[in-house]
Length: 328
Image (cartoon, rainbow, N blue to C red; front, side, top):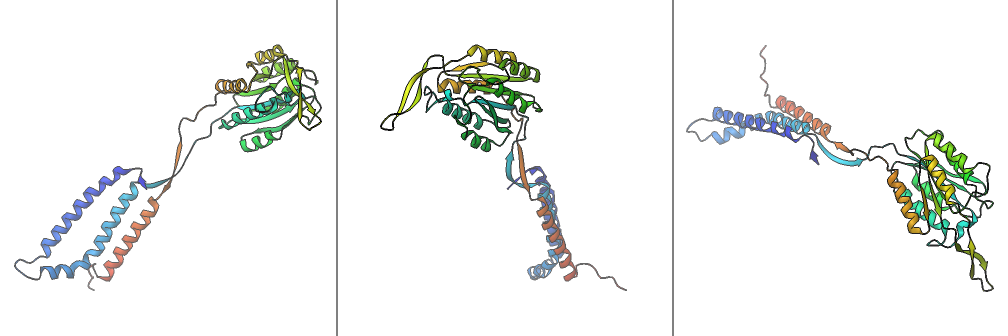
């Protein structure tokens, strides 16, 4: 327990001085010179001091209540307006290429997204995944545990293969259309060229620019030969083959430039992590100016205690007949 207004305790000083003065004056008035009955008389009159004692104690407690005794319950951070971020994740078959650690491109992307989620405080996050078609996995939310749980379920091979970048961006944009956030962002992760869908990436980028949505595009992988799963051999072991993956960095750069975002190309998990870190720095959320402390207040309890002592003082005054009787 501590006091929020400790200066009020200075009022104890005049109260204590007043009490000392009253005690001395009563002692002088009740004493008789050269007698052996002073001690006995003081003991006999002690009961008459009880009401005054309880009144004095009540005053001390009321002053202590003014000093606001409290205990700290918790410290809270006031909510701030964050960003709205939609992540559009490519889940086409090429994301199974084994040129990223710890397993393949899709696993590396999900791990880095998970790290990104852990750094959020007030941002709303949403997730769209796409191949030949696009689907909403997580609507905009600040429930990061739910987001992470649903992200873990995303995998390749659940929808027809293809890379419909425009459709993925279009679906992400539709979720940001009614957003009132000051900053709206789409993070696009893909390892290929647009080859499916009924919305062109350029059209989606133009719509994003009109809505004030920035698109940060991240190209995962390169245009070279990469190891790719080729099934199992006679003994049940995984086999691999080198496959040429078609990429289109110019397209992704154009998408980002048109919407006011930025383009990244990552050829390793470390570079992918760096891209997300850079986006985080560019789209930094506002930091609360202060923290609020919530206290448990005990002043009412001490006020009640003071009232009890005042009541006791009146009761003792009646019992010991401190008040003078009125003759009739």
